[in-house]
Picture (cartoon, rainbow, N blue to C red):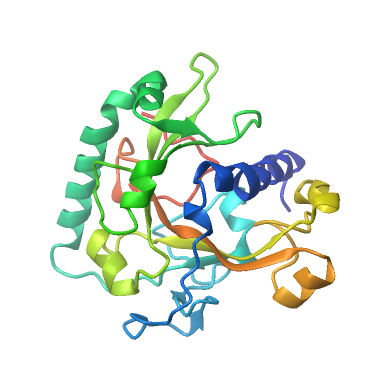
Length: 268
């Protein structure tokens, strides 16, 4: 059973991601690929509303990633790329990527330098286990090319003595990217990309239902079908946000460097 404190943090994060982060990305996050081109390379028994292959979060997560309450609470609203068999060179590619990311973001230990370079804090009025500082230009660039030195967002957490402590970076990719393309960017034998799906945006008179122990709307909401969303007066979005992956280059192992537990601080 999830602890009350975990529920509270999850609800806050749901609102943060479901509302203000959308605005911060200035429409970039709302893109939804309507065509099915490029999907022939996808594998797996389960697919998201756009035809992407997905692993079931409840049963298929392997030991590569340990999810916290926030990610685990989005079972009905997530698509996670299936794990591929390890190929020669995968670990070397992943380690080289982590090294590139670390070298690129080290200067943002001082979050004020991140702000100066165009990273904007999402939902600053809400206390969160992890803070996203979004870079709009990098997010747009990520739709057409993958650059490990230009993350779409920087990830920070708070400590008793430090307002924002850098822990990693988030990279995104176009919703039209297929499994092979995602694997070219980050080996799918090592890491898991994810996207958010089945999002029901609350009508204006029901926004309070993003919150609470049993939210109805948003990425932690009980509503996850178009029919149920329509019945509640909401707006259903089959695929919301781009493909995403988090990299925590200050962790010691590949498993932790590509962790999906956003509730835990990835310290260094």
